[in-house]
Image (cartoon, rainbow, N blue to C red; front, side, top):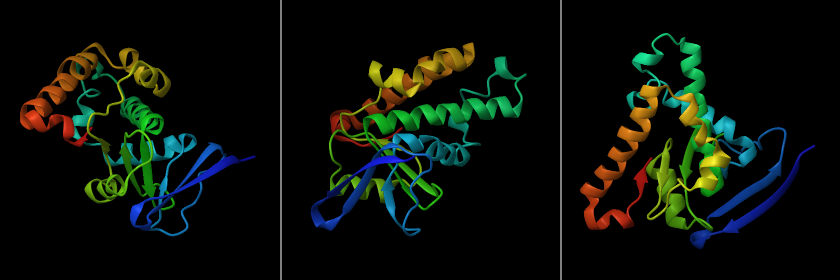
Length: 195
C-alpha cells in the first residue's frame, strides 16, 4: 500500500512544485508528458536507469570501469557497476537536493543539490541547462560522510578495481576540483557546475 505525503510549494512567478515523500510501490505518473515533478527516494532507481542508459558509452563514465585490471569482466558485469554508480549518485542527490524528471518513464532527469526550497532560478537552470546530468549549486556538494554512507557511494572503495579507485579518487576527483578552481578563480564559490 502506498503511503505518501504530498507537499506543494508555489514559487515566485506562479511555478508550483509538488513533492511526494513516503513509501510507494510504483512511481507516480506524470499528468502530461511535459509535467516536471520531483523524484522521491523511493524512485531513485528509475531515474538512475535513465542516466545510466544516457551515459552508457560516455568516456568519462566508463573511465573507472574500463580498466586493464577489469579487462576480463563481461559487459554485463561492467553494466552492473555502471548502473550502481548512477544509483549511488542519484540517491545522494535525493538526500541532499533536488532530482526532477519529465515524462512518465523518466524520459528526462535532472539532479541538483540544494538546501531548502528551490527558487524559480534553480528550477529554470535545471530545466533549461541540463536535461540529463547532475548540477551542484554554489557552495554545495554531496561529499559529507552521512550522504556518502546513506547513498552507497562508500561502496566504490570496494566495487572499483585498484586501477578504477586510482582513477576515480586520485585522478578524476582532484582534477575536477583543481580545474574548476583554476578556471573560475574568484567566481568559484558563486558558480554552478556539472558533476
